[in-house]
Image (cartoon, rainbow, N blue to C red; front, side, top):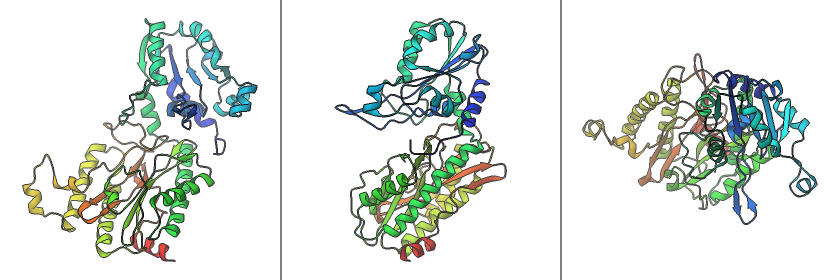
Length: 429
């Protein structure tokens, strides 16, 4: 890991909050992610299971967490199984957490080795009535891989078929969506790294640079500030490619007179930042580009006024769409009369604004949360309206992170340049 060591008080409290939601005499078992094979004997960079990290702080493969608050053996009410190291592993792959280090990171006193799990789980699990297991229930998930949690759940149900099984995900989704003060500190650190990256790009972007060169500048600034890397694959889309929502080829040259849309985020201590800015390659917006840009900025600021405890995400989205519709009319893309005559099942605004405005943020860039429940204080969301006019090669999205508070929302990226005039000024200094 590149980030500074974290306070284990956060993980201790997360476990207490989780344990309080379990049924009496329940055991919860949470696994680390698999190491994913890339090709041959090479693997993709390891990324920890978000729920395991949230509950333990352990950022290492081959880890299993057990939470069993009512266990008759007090030492197993919280226990952590970690990878057993040896001389070969240390020589080829580097240092793995010792027992004392795992204890210090997690705050869990009972630290065992993963190769002891099968033997030790049997006498412990027999006392429990309920078993909570974890699956990837992020509602954006479309993974068809037979991954670790799914394999483990199927195997355990064969071995212990008479226990009552429960989903850990609904509990964890509600807990993870409401951020602690320390979590917000970590997210603000990730935001600070994104701020430094954006100032770097404002000095770098000019006609003739390639999208991949901009991508290289992004990761340079991330890594030099202790980020693990990208929180998602960055989008660097110049010209008409900015109208492709998930354009990630980043392989074209940025030309004079074009805009370039940059959607990126830093992963710091497993917490994600997520920011989008759209800037003029030449350092100056054309009048039309600036008009569209200011329309998007207006929608973003009006959307932020709606974000508050108690509002439903879907209702909020409908209100934002109406605000955007007004701006699209002002831009001359259609008229109010056209709106009155439109097919309500296929409204006109969807030609130019075709994605949601906000998503949960946290350990994952598209974090878990209960989208059909009201927003709560200390949730963090993106706010990212966009207008995409393919026939004019204009695609503009502006994205900031916002914190829901009792009084409304706080823009966590308010200090990062976003006004068109300020961007022009900084690019031309």
